[in-house]
Amino acid sequence: MPEPILVIACGALALEIDALRRNWDWRHLHLKCIDAKLHNRPAEIPGRLRKEIRRHRASYRKIFVAYADCGTAGGIDQVLAEEGAERLEGAHCYEFFAGRTRFAELAGAEPGTFYLTDFLARHFDRFVIQPLGLDRHPELRDAYFGNYRKLVYLSQTRDESLLESAALAAARLKLEFEHVHCGYGELETSLALHFGRSNHGQKDSHILA
Image (tube, rainbow, N blue to C red):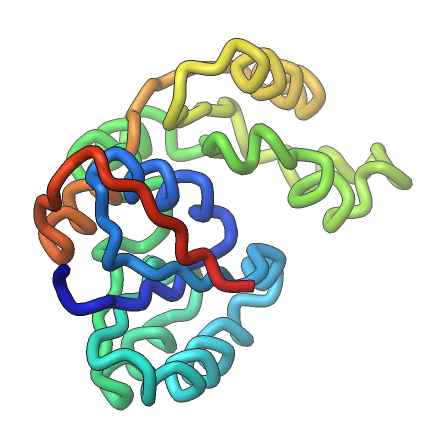
């Protein structure tokens, strides 16, 4: 059995990382998730990561952080350099799901694009509508989304209910809708680089509360 590695991840990636762990049989991957709501307060993410790294350092020789920069303007990288940990490459989850080249093409084709992942399609009201107050003040739509032209749903799974939710989200925001299926993208390749291949067929679960 390889040495256990702790992955401290954004809660928005919990289902995807757990699926990859099962698909690749990474029995040595132990997962700790941080509330995805911190994306609404990105300045708090680096400090929370430092706290979690230090909390678990005595139990794990290697800790990997499943965050991109996520709007912290280098704050996460500073913490990881000081604490001796690595993270996913990229500026945000849209980039590593789509892949850097593909995301650059999407952004270049229409700079005024709002993106959804499976997580955001599943929790659109909780993570978009409610934090912006659009459930109470729908007239604010133009203030927040007046410069957007398109909503692109970058899907990880082929789920018709999520596809329908994403299309409804685009209609609600009065944006053109496009669906791009990405799978797990560079999230999978990055984790595979760190965790390698294991013997398939063995199941285990180490999701921490």
